Structure formats: structure tokens, C-alpha cells
Picture 1 (cartoon, rainbow, N blue to C red):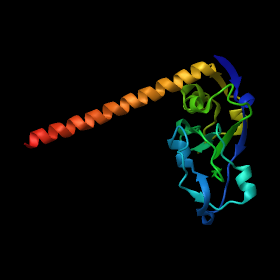
Picture 2: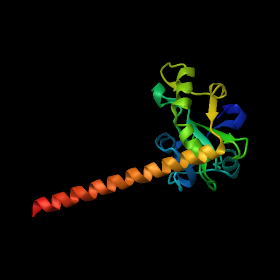
Picture 3: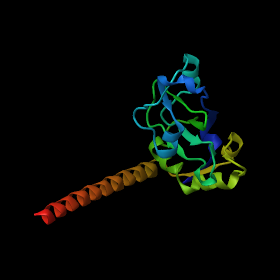
Picture 4: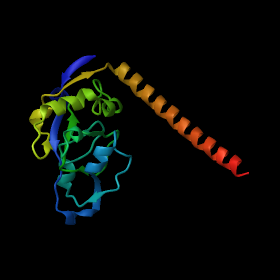
Length: 191
């Protein structure tokens, strides 16, 4: 494992702010709720916003980008992250998030690994301890630049991602089996 300052790996930028009348039509848009509730961005974005070619270029979403919520009423909800595992054509992201765009290629950190790293206690605890809390907790570039990441080697990253994928598959299989057994028992009880 090797230590890196976040600013050695990522450039930081803010997202798109528009009046409500510009939403509901146009191009794909990464909303705050998608970032808050997902480890990675879904393969397609259903929210839409009216954007210009310049906005699409400035607020683009590329593979490896990490989106971090920058404001919250609760300190422990600050810094929720979501990673782009693919490029999103003509898509932009919301102004309540920060975009961390890789300044290094995938030779240091894989996006599939980053989705877990940026949701880990290693990352979130540094945010919680660095952010002052008033009415709303707020995360800025200065705070993000102080974050230190302890990153596994690429082979270890791939191994971790594979283990997590296997565990997800195993747990999903157990849930399906549980569902089938319950339905079988209900069916047997009815007869």
C-alpha cells in the first residue's frame, strides 16, 4: 500500500447550477441523489438538463471521475461518493457535488476500486474530522486537498474488487434462495 494526497491523483471542480426551468429536458444529468445513494453511476442517467456545448465540455463525466457530495445538514452524510465506470456522452453533474477527475491514468487507482475506497471509513472519517459544522456541513477544495489515501497495489485492487463482486453474487443468491424457500413453505402450508 502507498500513501497519496488526493490532490496528487485528482483535480477538483464544482458542478452545474441552473434554474429549475432548465431541468426535465435536454441532456443526461447526474443528480445529487444518484451520487448520494450509489457507489457507482448507473449505466444510464434518467434525469435531464438543458445544457450548452460549453457546459457539456466543462461539466463532463468521464470514466474514473469521482463525485462527492459537498453539502449536507448532517456531518456524517457529507462526502458521499459515486464513481463513473464509463464515459457519459453529453452528461453533466450537479452543483451540490465536487468532481474529482483523475490526473493520472489507471496505473495507480482503478475506478472499480475507487468506488469502495471513497465510501470507506478511511475517506469519510477524514472529511468528518476536517469539516466545521454550523447549520450545514460544507466540503470545499481546501479540505479535499488535505485528504490522504492509502491505496493498494493494482493487483490487490483487482483482487479486492473480485472478492466484493463474488460476495455480492453470493449474498444475492442467498436472498433468492430464501425467497424461493419461503414461497415453497407458503405453498405447502396452503395445501
